[in-house]
Length: 234
Image 1 (cartoon, rainbow, N blue to C red):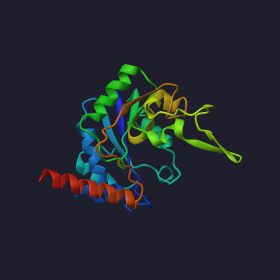
Image 2: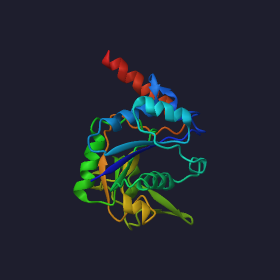
Image 3: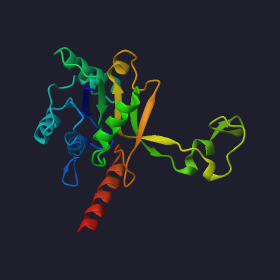
C-alpha cells in the first residue's frame, strides 16, 4: 500500500504566533513531527504542505520534501483539512503518482512514541478500515455514560440510556482523538469528501504525555514537560 504522509503547516497562527517554527526545547515545533515521519519505514513519501517560504525552507533543512507552496486560499483559519489533502493528492496525481491512503501528521501534536506511525499503518492495513485515528482513553469521570445533556429543566444521560451505570468497573472504554495520527483512504477523501468513513480503526497513543498545541498555555505545558524530561535524564 502506498501511503503519502502530509505535514500541514501554514504560516498564519493566532493562538501562538509563528507556531510551527517557534523553538520548543531548542528546535522548531515542526521538527518533532518531521523526525517522527522520517523514521517511518512504511510511509511511501512525506510532504510538507505550507503557504510560507520560511516554513518551506526550514522543512527542507530538516529533510522534508516541499514540492509546492500551498495557495493562500488554502491557508486560512477556515480552510478545511480536507481541502489541504485534496490539493496534495491532485498535485501528485497530475504527475501520475498515485497513493492508496494519506497519513496526516500535525506539527501541533509533537510528541509521538517511537514507531507509532508504522504501528498505526500496520493496523490500518490489517483492519482494511476507511480511516484510522490515534486516540487516548477518556478518564472514567468523563465517560459518555456518565455525561449529561440538558433537556428543558432536567438532565438526561448523553448516551440515551434510561438508567445510569453505577459502577466505574462496568463502564465501557471510550476514547477521544489526540490529533497525533490520522490515516484515510484516498477514495474516502476524493470520492466521499470526508475524513471519516463507515469503518474507523484506532491505535492508542502513548500516555506518558500528550498535548495538542493551540494556545500559549498548551505551549507552556509542552515546554514544562520537556524540562522535566531533560532533568530526569541528567
